[in-house]
Image 1: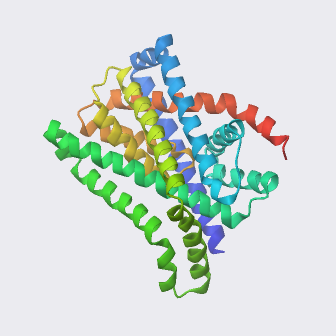
Image 2 (image 1 turned 180 degrees about the horizontal axis):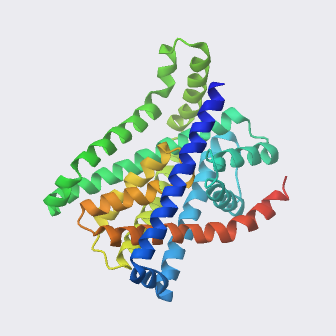
Amino acid sequence: MQDITKTKLKSGLLSVVTVAFVFVVVVFFYTNPERLERFSSLSVFEMVSLLTLAVLTFVGLALQNILILRPCGIWLPVSEAFGLAVISSLLNYMPLKLGALGKGLYLKAVHRLMLKHYVGALAAGQLIWVTVSGALGLLSYLVLTNTNIIVAAKLRMVAFVLLLATLAAFMVFVLSQYIWRFILVPRWRNLAMQLGEALGVWYRDIALLSKFAFISLLLFVMSTLKIGLSFNVVGAELSLLEACFLQACVTVAFAFSLIPGNVGVREGMLVGLAMLTGVEVETAFLAALIDRVAILLPTLLLGPLFIRRLGKEL
């Protein structure tokens, strides 16, 4: 009964957020028709640049998929890992983040990957990704305090929340192999112990950890450039440091979000944070929509193709 209630609450939350987001988009373009013209008048170079960066983010996600499965004894071909990254992104727009579930079912059916090993690999990759992204975002904030004190002051509270989330991810990653000893509930104790064992593999393989951190760094750079370009094409003055901080906040929020695809939440965060840096709300909203479309187009175009291709493996 409790699980059913939680599912209904999540479905209701999804419906409310999605309807509200669509309503805001319709009202925005209805009251600002000139913004729609700017949206549709992107140059070929701008569109190609945005789509290229979006595809490169999928390449980064594919490399992450390859590395997190290495401790499980699985080496995915790049094409297969890329397809799983695209399909996972597509399925993430469905309720309950079906991207992770769909990828897990595929790996179990095709590569005989056990569920507990998949969950451990997924948790390890997510914790490292959040830690790296949060650290880069905090670093950009520290540099921002020396170059733009006014903007840094407005972002101080957000930076504090980002610091807490980054520290939480790092502490779970580092202390997971010890935390389970203090858990009294047998069920949770066993789950925590399995997670600690999965993450412990990364401590013993520094080379693998370094590779994953480096890939995460490149992925973060690609995502930051995409956000920066999305604002640049609409004439917004957003520095690279500010774009880096925004990307870090979006990454951490997505890790803890229950909304499929972060639809509405990502745009709201980008608009709110961009406004703190001095970007007008309408300009920020348009840039957030362009950023969403840039990642959505390759997802919708390539997703069905890879579903058909990888579906044959099943």
